[in-house]
Image (cartoon, rainbow, N blue to C red; front, side, top):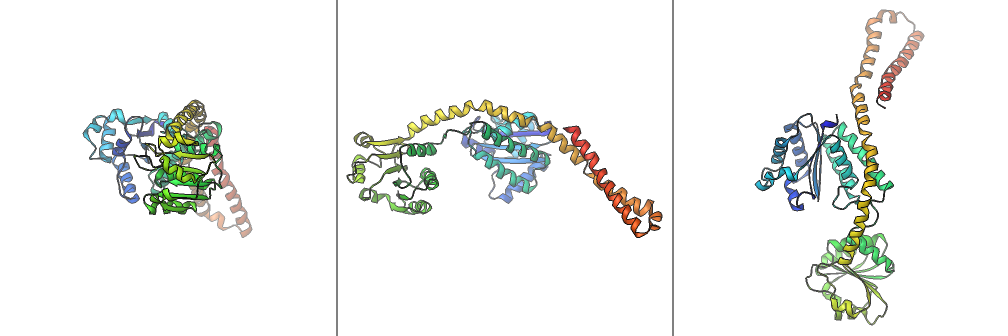
Amino acid sequence: MLAKYNILTVTHKRTNLKDIGDFVIKVDDQEALKQQLQQLKAQFQIDELFYLPTCNRVMYFFTTNHQVDERFIARFFQRINPDMPIELEDELDDIVYHYQGEEALRHFFDVSASIDSLVIGERQILRQIREAYELCHSWGTTGEYIRLVFQQAVVAAKAVYNRTRIGDKPVSVVSLAFQQMLKAHVHKGDRVLLVGAGQTNQLVGKFLSKYEFSDITVFNRTLDKAEQLAKTLNGRALPLSDLSDYQEGFDCLIVCTGATEPVITAPLYEKLLQGDTERKVVIDLSIPNNVAEAAVEQFNFEYIEVEGLRNLAKQNLAFREREVERAHKVLNEYIQQMPALIKQRQIELAMRQVPIEIKAVRERAMNEVFHKEVATLDDQTKALMEKMLAYMEKKCIGIPMKAAREAVL
């Protein structure tokens, strides 16, 4: 049965992230995606199909009794993207991973446990797998055999997170910056100035909200975006042009804008201080830096910037990578259980007719074979006989089911 499992996948490991889009099903809505998946199943004689697109991979996990060779793979992706660039078609062997049988299961378990992720140990992939599976299941493109793998992979991934430290030590720049901010003794009652309202500072905002920071002022070139972010933080919003006139002081300054020149110059920083001599914390998440070198050199503040955070992220990622071997040992325990689980389910499916046939034998005995004899019985005897037959029916159904399960285990 394991030989039926196949995975065709394109990931960050073999191609540029932008090229992964050429292997994704391009549709406008979920109904169109459902139709595409159903058409793929029919055209390529696939029994079950699970589809997972993320920012750094696309995966087609399916079962089939037909051979999956180079010709199959070429036809498969030509069907998905008829406009695929010729140079990519010529490189399919180098770009597309094909896993079959136990290898397919191992890859799916690795992905679920974030071992094969762009960032090892990030749990977001498990949520993405759950959501993708729920969609495919609701559309009927998956069945019993992918369900078994999915359920076992979820349990295995949770065991990896519980029994290893693969998810320890943050590796995202924003989470590291916030961790360093807390180490610098910035407290939830302190005054925070957030300069910029783009995606990075929106992530910063989530941390500020989680840790209940309450005195936040957001500055941005576009006031609407500043207001949107400030609303989520119960803070205030001001245009970036007002920053030089701000006189209410601050304890922590977090800056990330798209500017290519420094936003926080030495004269502007001095204005923001308003004569305050307390040591401040300044976090610069911009590339290039938004805090001028002159300000860093002239003023005494705790400076947290991207390059230092990147080095820390590399150290933390190296720590996570050392946990991969332990994680594989955990996953292997669950992968080894799969043949027995699949065999047990096969037997259960094969024996679904047993209860129906036993009930049919009972009905035939009562209404045909022994019809005349039953007709001569009084009501009390008939009731006793019905009770006995119901007992025998239940036992006759349970005995072979139990024997089958024990044989597999």
